[in-house]
Image (cartoon, rainbow, N blue to C red; front, side, top):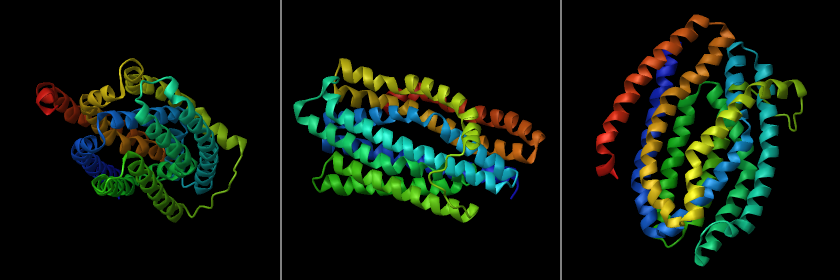
Length: 329
């Protein structure tokens, strides 16, 4: 398959995946809020924000993983691909333990910092403890999502995301209609995420015939990974501050329900970011593969044509939403 067709196929599947996510979110968000209430859903969003902040401990390794898997796959150096995957898996297994411990600590002391109703303290504690337990599997298994993306199998990743989104929506409808709460729904969402990652491991193993060495502690491989990941780490720190600090500020100074109200408008901005990442993600991993093949002219074309097409799609959508944001909300 040609590079252009592969990128087009991956973008098509990514657009489908994001479209499903937006549609599911559009309908399931008000359904959940009606059943659990603004205060409880605000607690849920706060728990997800706290969990999201620990994503900074990724240190940019996911970006390095996808880059080097793509690049060395382009060179047909599967031995080095397997080393990168094994080192990343070892790193994420360690980080998963660290984050699990930190989340369990947060579960015991979060009420000292946020304005949470006494009746919702138990919910917050349970959400953080579930997140802490699932981190032991979610983090190391995330290695294989990065591996599949590095192999430019974004279509497979998109299909898994669609299935997970649909399953979570069905679970929300069934559980909340049956009288269960946000904690049980969160448990199911974590389980579907883990199952999706297990399937991505199967796809990775099938394409690379890899055998994960654990623990894998080769200094040279880690040096290669961190020589790139440190720059992505700096970028992610800035992004977290820009795009996630608002929930912390609102929760500290106002209330949990105010976070839910703010999220209604904030989700619109999130849709634009989703469009940007949907169109930009597949080309971003194709470029390292071209690097591995020394196809520098292809990289130039990818950069200039990709920028042109993304601008042609993205700018009109943003300008249009200026006029429709208020009725949409």
